[in-house]
Length: 298
Image (cartoon, rainbow, N blue to C red; front, side):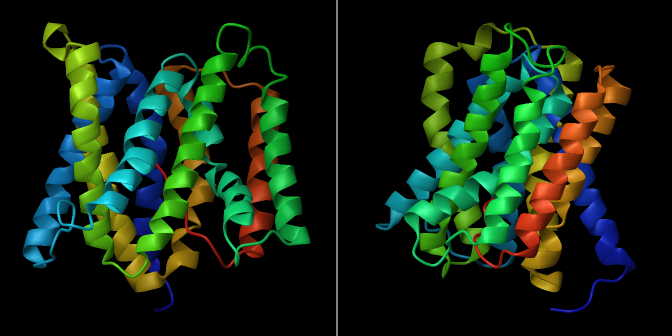
């Protein structure tokens, strides 16, 4: 791994912008698409650049081999379920709130890793980071302008979506010796298989009449925010390493707030800004003292 230069930092910021912008695009897409169909179309378009990459690099895709079970399980827990839950939640809460809630995924992952793994135990400082981070979330629930009786359940659904990302991340550890491109492509293909029948049965997408803006947002989510973003992330990981790549966690909620405020006219209160600062401080303390689990997200 080499020391990051200007181009590397530019890619990191670009990745944060893409992932930060995904939340207001999810919000726009929910105006015309139901959550399962939204997730389905997103992963279909995400699979295209991944399949192309595997073809170019001559990487064998193991999705439908005799070892298909872990790929299917990860596709369900790390992609299909969280994509649907996040779409459901974001439809009723501010897009930047979804970005802030999702930024705590590494903190949730650390708790699950402490319980279910032998070598990812919480230290005092990591525990402190987790407590500080989640105190920021608790503060958000006291802001009745942002979270109230009408949408608090959807905020919890969004948090549940982030928890499934963590579960998927733990399951992915079992495939740590497999090629990253193979794992990502195989799990994405399985997510398509899981989502397709539910979309056709429960949402009858052929009866929908989507707007152009919602469709463009959905295409952006699939091709750019999922497919292209993964390729950028993989480049950063291979050139600069995991520690550098994880710094994107600080930038995503910031860009999410900026996009929500300037493009969606969403109200931002002082509690929101204070919560964001507290959460970022908690993530910083945790990451500074963490050498372990990689939890995929966004």
